[in-house]
Image (cartoon, rainbow, N blue to C red):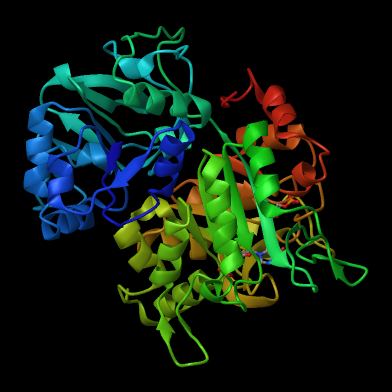
Length: 523
Ligand code: 1PR
C-alpha cells in the first residue's frame, strides 16, 4: 500500500492512475498519523509553493512530514513535492519550506520561455534504482518556472539543460524527488514509478550519448468536443470554425477512444476543447468531466481542457467561480486549463481600467494552481489594413497581401468560438494575459483552421515575439513539412493539429519521423 499525500491543489489523479496501472494500491493520506505510519509515501506537489505550504501547515502535516523524511523510509516527491523539501522558494518569499534539504528554490533567470514546459532529457549524476531499465536518452515531462538549488551538490541525482543546467532530481538514500512528472512521461515515466515502488530493484546508471539535454518540440493532438443534435458527445472538426456539414455536426469519433489512440501513436500532449462551453456551463455538462476521468486512467501525457472556464450564475441563482470549474477539471484529470472567451473580456476590462482585480479567472487559477496550469486559447482572424498606423491595434507587415493588395494586417480576437469579433488584437491579448499570470498561449487561427494550408507563421511570430511564455502554434497543419516550417520559422515551442490526425491523413508517428534529425522531438 502506497500512502499518497493529496492536499487538494491540482491534478493528482494521474499519479494515482499511474501507480494503480502498475497493480499497486494507493491510500490517500487523511490525517497526520497516516504520514507517520506510512511505509512508502508519494507526494505529488501541484499548484504554487505558497499555497502548498499554507495547506500543509493548516493540516498540521509539516511536523509529520519532517519525521517521515528523517526516518529514511521511501519517499517520492514530484515537482512541488521536490521543491517542498527545501528551505524556501522565490515563488513565495518569506514562506518556509520543509527545510529537509539545505538550499532554495529559484525562478529561472534565462532568455528562453518560462515556464520550462515540455519533454527534456536527464544528465545522470549518480546511480539509482529508479533508473533501472532506462536507456538514458528518454525524455520526461517538465512544467515549472522554478528549480531547486541545493547547497550540497552531493544530493543531485540528475540535471537537465534549459539554457543553463539545473537540478532535475535529487536522491538521499530512499528519498527521491523529481522536478519532472513521471506520471506524465509515458512509458519511461511509468518505469520510474515502478522502480520506485519496488524497493528491491538494483541500482542503475544509464549512459547517454550526447553531452547536454534538449527540450523537444511538442506535437499536440487537439480534440474539439461537443454534443451532436442527438446529444452524443463527439469529437468534431471545423472548417474555419464551422463544424457542420450538410446541417449536421461533423462526427469524427469518440473523445476517450481518440485520446487513447493519440497517446499510443506518440502525442506529446492532448488537448480537449469543449467548444460549446461558452453557452453550456461545464459543471452542468458532466460528460466532459467523465471524458477526462476515463482518459486519464490510461493516457500518461499531459491533458489540457478548455471551454466554459468563467464565472457563472445558474438558473437557481447559485454563483460559481471560474476557479471552481477549473478545480473540477483538475480533479478529473486535467493538468492545464485553457481559457478562451473569458480571457478576452478580462483583458478588455484591464485595458479600460488599467488595474488588475486579482480575482479574474486567469489571476485566481494561476495563484492557486501555478501559471503553468493556465493556458490562454486565442481565436484570431486577419483584418487587412492599408498602413501600419491605420488602426490603434498592433499591426504587422504581411507577405500575404489582402484582397485589395493591402500589405498590413492585424489579428482581431473573437469570443464564443469565433462568432463575435472584438476590438482587441491577439498580440495585446497575449501580452496582458502573460502579465495576469497565464503560463502558455494556444494560438489558433480562424483563417487557417481546417484548411491544411500550413500554420500562419506571421501570426505565430508576431505573438511569440511579444511574450516570454511558450506559444503553441495551431490551425492549418496539412502535412509533416508544415510542422518543420513552424518549428524552424518561428519560436513556437509546440504545434497542435486536429483534422489530419482525426482523418488519419498524417499520423503523429509520421510527423515525428519526418522531424527526426531536423528538429528535437520525443521519439
Ligand atoms: O471560450 O473559454 O469557452 O473556450 C472555447 C474553446 O473552444 C476555445 O479554446 C476555442 O478555441 C474553441 N472553439 C470554439 N469553437 C470552435 C470551433 O471550431 N467552432 N475550436 C473552437 C477551436 C481550433 C483548434 C483546432 C485547430 C487545429 N478549434 O482547436 O483544433 O485549429 O485544427 P486543424 O489542424 O484541423 O487545422 P471558451
